[in-house]
Length: 394
Ligand code: 2PG
Ligand code: MG
Image (cartoon, rainbow, N blue to C red; front, side):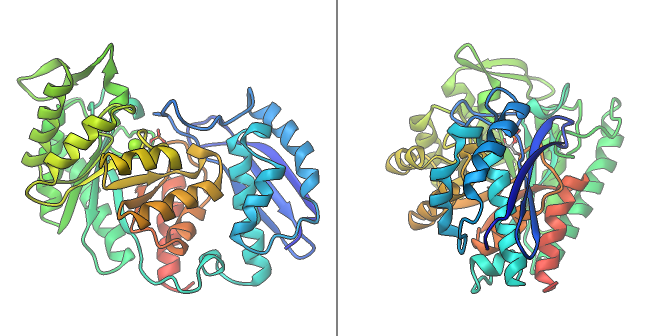
């Protein structure tokens, strides 16, 4: 595939904020890609824009001329592409949108699904972690936990998706009964919001998920709770409100909910700099049964941070978000390294998404064991429905 024209434009994301979409034209087709964006971002993430989307686009469109006629034949060519245009030149969003567009054009020229271009031997589908109730920075006046997630144990993607959707609607019904302020409000990722305490929300999800052969997990996004050296739980339980927990107390609360509500997956239980506390938590959580302690902000899809975490045994799972590092090539390196070290990679959406469904193709092509997606909203269903289509061989 050789680009004959490359152009970036400003488009809207699901948070009604600007993002970048890129079109790559070739003599045979045109491929599109667009970049997501986070709300609860770590301080280690790549810059999205150089000042703003407009300036990034202007800079990008200039640099992109150097890629005309670049001979792009496989994924590893991105290493060369990123010598020509990278985060420092135009921001991470432009690079990610470009790389998605190039892969889409390559797949079209080869007349193959994208996953097959990446890996013709892909077989196993990922398990889904679906966000059903949320709060934190993804909503106002909802729970402290950013995401409560369900992971159906299913024989197929389709069964997993529809099991998760059944759970999602049963939760709505329960929240409507128990929460007198419930207005069917949703977080940035389409999960239900509620004025009930964290423990009550977890109790509801645990009970319903248990009836549908599903496990539950959370993304604590603990950095967002961190205020002047302490973790602030506004509405932990009916009895305990406004807890300013030091690290020890916070770990106690995390262990309490983890055991009581049978959590099998806990993302970012602690602040983004806490390798050591993650490691203590990981050890304690895996003493009697296997639980996934996952690093998102802690790692920020950064290989050198993952190496430190592996050395300190801080985690046994890691979130992969290509835009966090502003390079699809580097994101894949993080995923490969994780697999090599028995750390479970979880390919994840962002709170600000577009209808781009490439994450599903990447997840299957890269044989990611888990994906973290949302269930409601076109930008979320685009990814789940793409997984269903891959499963149906369409
Ligand atoms: C997270 C993500 C996605 P955001 O914290 O894992 O769910 O949220 O995109 O806002 O960082
Ligand atoms: Mg997270």
